[in-house]
Amino acid sequence: MKNVHLKAYGKINLSLDVKGLTDDGFHLVEMIMQQILLCDEVDLKWREGDEPFSIKLKTNRPYLPVDERNLAYKAALMMRETYAPDMRGSLEINIRKRIPVAAGLAGGSSNGAAVIHGLNVLWDLGLDMEELCAAGARLGSDVPFCIMGQAAENPELKKIFDGDPLACHCALATGTGTELTPVKKGLRSHLVLSKPPISVSTAEVYRGIDNEEIPLRPDTDKLLEALEKNNRDSIRKNMVNVLENYTLKRYPIVVYTKNKVQSLCGEDGVLMSGSGPTVFGLCDSISQSRRVCEAMLRENRESFWTRTTF
Ligand code: ATP
Image 1 (cartoon, rainbow, N blue to C red):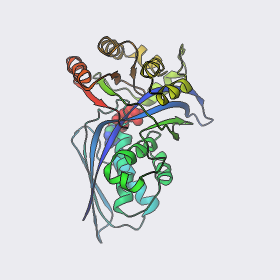
Image 2 (image 1 turned 60 degrees about the vertical axis):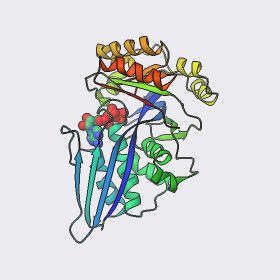
Image 3 (image 1 turned 135 degrees about the horizontal axis):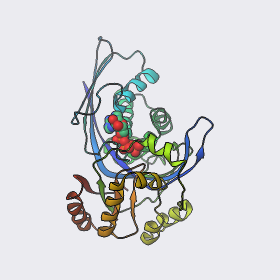
Image 4 (image 1 turned 30 degrees about the horizontal axis):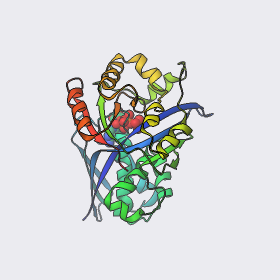
């Protein structure tokens, strides 16, 4: 039997702009994605044998599906179909979730990415970062970024992808979100995250955003320059997510959470991640992130102090 244990990290969006629609109805985006230390733990056990291929998935969240509706399960099916159709044996996937679900933190995508990486190792497929990202893109638009981030942070994967520019913690995503350009100097910051107790469907937000007025869009070049110079004031000022124009209007509890985090972290540098509802705030020290988290825990049970990976 062979095992692999991988951390499946979450992400935040330092900026997010919607630029238009493709002919087949997908949204074109421009966003800066940053990996964070808050992670799920993904354990894979592979026993090769004569029996037909099988997958058994367990998680510590009873409400999550454990069949092909789960992105980790889907990733395993996709990897077998594409790269190892004759493989026989049993695969066990055990996921210990910490990243809140349907939160705008790419928790599901990250689990899928960990399975893609894990099977590449367990089945000795020898796929390079480009092939892994292409496989990830078939699963979901946030998966390639998670693949890149995990390759840069998981000790087991760092050994394999050392020096590969696609193994990175921060990236500019364009197209439908899967065209990724590594950002060499990402954000180095302590953070607080707070998720109001509602679920927001990514599909609903993207459907709705086309009919909203967008008074302010991110200046991606400015934000990239601020990151390069590690200019914290400029980073804070240039963090803009256009999806707030839909989600904040529909879900007052997200406005309440954002205001509360701003009252504790400062006006700038507080943003909704992805389509929401999680709000994150930049903190100047680990002690500030703990203090703010303690206060936010009184509002939202799913509040965390963490930091970016770099
Ligand atoms: P993104 O930021 O990529 O849009 P998200 O953080 O908003 O993702 P996820 O946590 O990935 O959202 O979950 C979205 C949906 O995916 C949930 O409704 C959930 O039922 C489903 N899902 C499938 N597999 C998983 C998984 N392994 N972990 C979490 N959610 C999963």
